[in-house]
Length: 76
Image 1 (tube, rainbow, N blue to C red):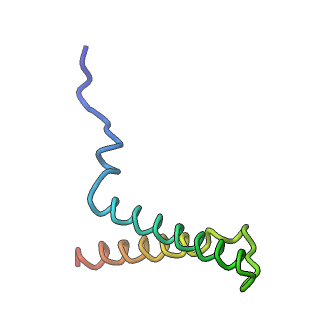
Image 2 (image 1 turned 90 degrees about the vertical axis):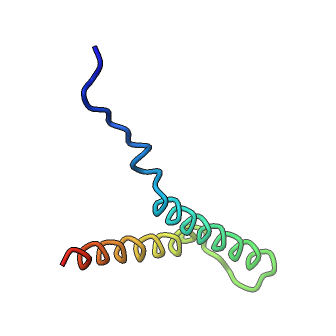
């Protein structure tokens, strides 16, 4: 017996705007890790590796808030 409704979470996540958001966050995370690694190796800056994910999280929060505001005022 076939189900009437098909719940496909992957197709809902795999949209064009979500791909851009994921790539942006991964790029920010990559740049943060590279900057921390180079700074640590050259001795230019002491890096606390526990807080290395903060820039990527900040970018993600900015994107989420921007999208929420865009969707909120688009409907008015």
